[in-house]
Image 1: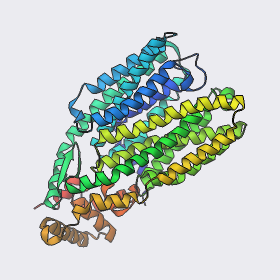
Image 2 (image 1 turned 45 degrees about the vertical axis):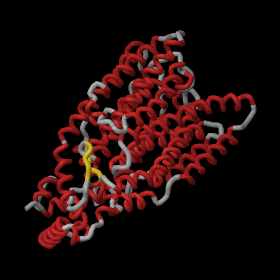
Image 3 (image 1 turned 180 degrees about the vertical axis):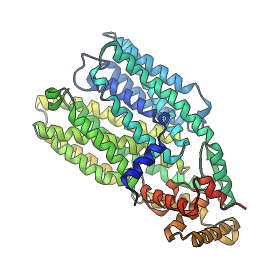
Image 4 (image 1 turned 90 degrees about the vertical axis):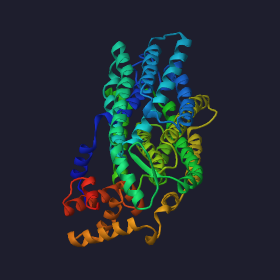
Length: 502
């Protein structure tokens, strides 16, 4: 069993700061619409801050869908100017929005600019994170949330031109990190070629995309056809979850009771940190990164928060704030990893699946914020009670859960990897590999499970692939790989593959 210290060391070894650049995009969203950094005279949450919010929220939603469709068959790594175009739109729009004052037209145009720029940068980051090693992405995305969390300690307490310049600089930092991350993906293309060559020697036809090799041919086409419905149902589930988050964000008070008393939003901090820790736990110890599995424990937690909203007082308000922050932090990480996983399996282009999924997230937030703001008017006028709205949200979330795909991973494995199930007499490369695995296992004293994992490693399979096939957690597979390396006396994947050459 891998200890907590081993996990911490593994995370430390895997993190490259440039891979955390999407965190600057998330930090920009938080600093622009959840703090007073840009709008000192704001009241309530982001929806009330400025007219640019609505223009930005609407344009980012539309552009995420549009960019996902437009870039689905294009190699974005060849368009080196796109990250800086996106960053320039966001930076200029942010500065113009802060300086617009009562000029509504400037506010609208600046909101459109930030919406278009942020949508483009999110899609580009989805494509870039897909191209790097899957295990690095699984570390980078949670760590990127830590970047946003760090910014939450700074930007709520600065105002004026310093705050405007600071928020405007965040997308520029993100663009620089993005270019460097694309460089990492290009450098690792040789590893992809080696994996592809070995897989083809075993009778599996692949095509490469950046540093990732995925199945081509009939199984990929059938997989895409069978999973389009699952994709939309997962997106609907995420959209409803963010509708609930957006609803209560718009309905909440400008400052919590703790914030009024101590000048610090304790409940949001506790919720965000807890959510990030839960996301890391889910990634390392769950058998797979799957939205259905996630919502089995996240949806009851969200329902507790929704129920707390029906009561007045500091405690119910704190419970709601913590729960919403936990849900937001967990979903931010797991949603990105889940849909990138679909791209890694060869079902959809990364730009497409990230654009569509993030588009549904923004749609949920937009509708939730607008509905929450309107609901507040109904509550104050006595048209409806909070308990009735809470009951409606619980029913909506329950319906979305009922529509979520079931048996998803099992069907994916049957469709995607059916080409691996070839007969040994038609696949001499696979037979030789299995014989070598058996020989090394007996010689070095590998356990039955370690031998099974070695068989996949010998075929060039990644640890995420092995997890899916054997239904093991990341922690368990990493432990088996560590023991295999120690027993075989190798220190890298290439050294292990060299044992099967010749």
